[in-house]
Image 1 (cartoon, rainbow, N blue to C red):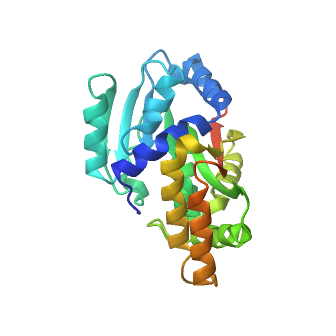
Image 2: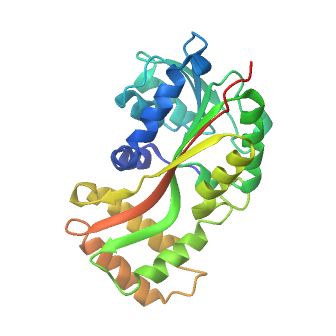
Length: 271
């Protein structure tokens, strides 16, 4: 699957935390504390594509009690960084694994599986297999910051819509899991979980990028421009003008990048 640097993950973390829907997290934490979910023990939370531990940090900031965290990533350097930052504070198991190989994912015993900004990279086959495993072991799922294809900028530029449409097409490319769900990820995930009998809750979690996020916005704009430069019918000169215009307004304009958070809770036990 596609890799991400520590610097990029750190750069986006402020925007990610601000965007996360806090009401959904409160609902999640209440469920984890319930007798149905906890069974009197500290729950095991498995974080897929954990990076340096951003989901752990976000939930801790929002009042998560003592969990046992199993951080899973294909990148050993990211896991090492997570341990360096948090091993003295949290109970952490690190597990390096190819996320695309479902049978190798260490989900056993997980009361909750979490993932942030992961499922728009994944395929429908990956989602189907993951939901099957979660349903079999009655694990909950908290999937945050799934890109939903909605992007807007202030001030506007005539090429905004065309660039956005091209970028959404680019998001469907294979990111290592097969044909990516891209902007359709959250909806597909919601449907798969509902079919499996989960109670599914969703909430919008858009990035709202202002002057405080200028460095992130600069990187985002350059990345979008590079992604759509070939194969999508955009004129090279016009695209460069769009990039120059957008970069000139990162400290005075506003960029909104849509995401959707998904929380899925298993049906109460009939026992």
